[in-house]
Length: 340
Image (cartoon, rainbow, N blue to C red; front, side, top):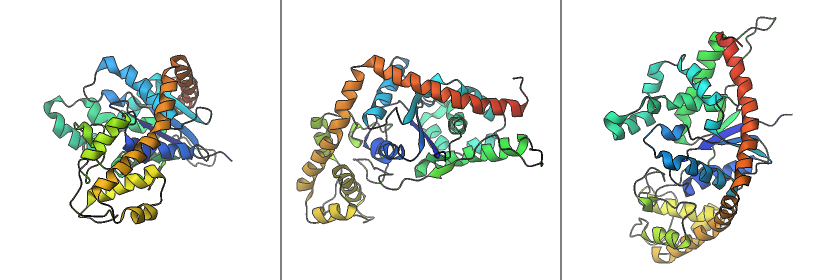
């Protein structure tokens, strides 16, 4: 029996941080044993906001190397760069032409980002959920790992597949039953570590776009910088760390980080730290973070020291991804009436 297929990806903007690793990439690694996994670096999404062209290619390679350094195995997963598979752009255009504008205007993330950019908002920022839908639908993904903030985008992809493509253009089999053109994916909500919060605000998610570098621990931060950021992390005046106190979001976040990084159950971490003050706890958390990231950073350095090997992995991934994506694109083109 074919394994269920999973697709996910991260933008090559900014440095990958603990939230990306603990909330997404570490879970991707576990999925490789039970699923057919496709992981892409979504560089087309990186240009929906102003970007530095001189850094895009380097950041793309860095992100791909971090995927591998964190445990993504190219022998078990397809690792590729989004822009190197042209079907992403073509299917996005085809889906644009059947997607109602008001579906995009109600997207919460567009509204939030548009407020920040003012008059400089691009059409791409409004439209990137359709490109995201194309990313997902091209690979006949059964499951898409999503956090709460991305569920709306997956729902859009499902609606486009069901209501705008399959319902309107699906051919019929001899018995008159419709033959689905696009597979409709389901969300895969990964609970543990799904929301790693900012070091400067325990009520906000850790983010690459936060202008405050001290709000996050990047995967390539030095041990000294990690310790410095944790030392300055926001805390409260209460002695002892606990989970679940709505009045103490920083305690909940930092204790959760410690449990994940030290490989402890939440119950064990809570018991170990119940009587600790922040002065005793923060060095413990810093040590756990440094040790957890040490093998990732070592493997990353090895990968970047062999650029030909890294490019070979991406080329291998591009070939497999193209084969799958082109087959899906051909079905959509045929259904919409284009010449073969």
